[in-house]
Amino acid sequence: MTLIQLVTSLIAAVRPGTDPNQYSGPAWSPYVVGSLIAVLGMATLLVSNKPLGASSAYAKLAGMIGLAVAPRHTSSLKYYQDNPPKIDWEVMLVVSAVAGAFLAAWHGGEITGEWMHPMWIARFGDSLALRLGVAFVGGALMAFGARLAGGCTSGHGISGTMQLSVGSWVAVIAIFAGGISTAMLLFRINMGG
Image (cartoon, rainbow, N blue to C red; front, side):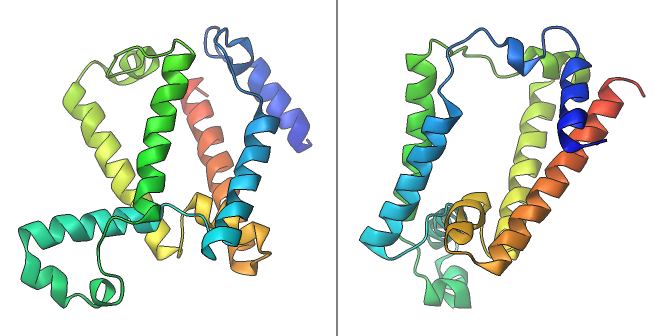
């Protein structure tokens, strides 16, 4: 079975109401968005001589919190001695991404104000504590993985592959393999098979 046949069969077997191809809301062209991301990645390298990435911003934010809560300990960490925590362009990139997502949702009329998606409630119940706990643990694992891999999906997937970094290509292949495997596993669990 080819990858295209697999994706087609997965889409055909999706439960009614969850098919992404039947999405009735406004959508931005993935070609336009992909092109804009490429331009942003190239512009970032040309203007700042630094690759586009977001995981370092979270480390800097954690360092700023550490300096407020435990300044002596945070200042003693080698990472923060080499990379002093501060608000810089990477932190502002993350803030801008959140603001941009809000503006896109507002422009598209998709601000729901809901804490939990109906699909989550149908599968796991309506416990807000569970939802927030899972989101926090998932975010922490993603941040740990990004730091362990030497970059996040934007760092490796956009900047690293654009620079033809072998490590970034290996990371992106692993990201896709893990994502596809997880999606297939969840699909089988969700369909009861």
